[in-house]
Length: 235
Figure 1 (cartoon, rainbow, N blue to C red):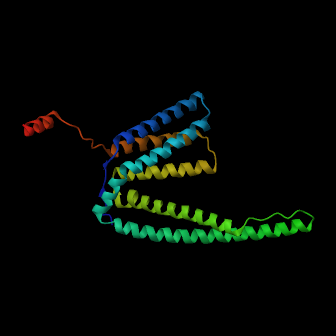
Figure 2 (figure 1 turned 45 degrees about the vertical axis):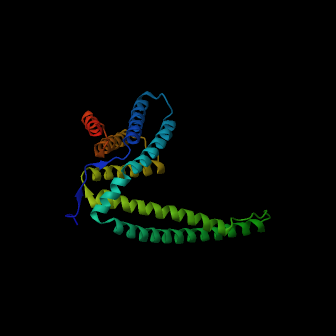
Figure 3 (figure 1 turned 135 degrees about the horizontal axis):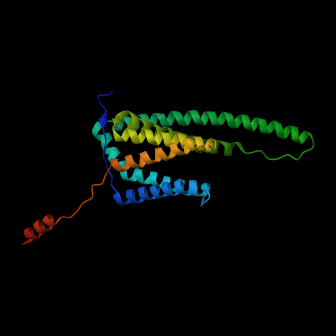
């Protein structure tokens, strides 16, 4: 398994201008956030919301810029078909499991709601119309679809960034995983400790450095020699 791993330190960036624009936007937002942490010129939550939008657009631009190069790597290793077949199974199983679990919880909530309404009407209250089961089923279907997509994305990310390749691409994978853990932790509970803020900044700085070093800007430049050669061929 280890012998089949490939070192990847460069990936072709198909749209250098898009990548550079989004990269510079993230860097500027990071600098503003650090300065605002000490200066308190802006409301931090507004700056964080603005930065979250930039990060999401940066993530989308990364998929656009490096998606083709990653697919080529998978094709060269002959692992693309295996990745697709496993992804389909993971999507099916994760969808089925999440849908069954959500359906059971929905049935339990509906039963508890029915008991509450029964006791409420017996005590002279006005009976309210409970949520229709069909609405619960549709919402469970949508949530299960989102869970299955997230499971496939996680599987592909772990396989590509942490198992199939090593080098700078693995460092970026570890940094992305740390960033996701930090974002989930902040969404669960607000932690305002200096060492947490330093960790966030370090992860962001290392990621921005590594993703810039990973990008291979194969921009076509027209040289004077090529122009002279083209003119001489026409003569």
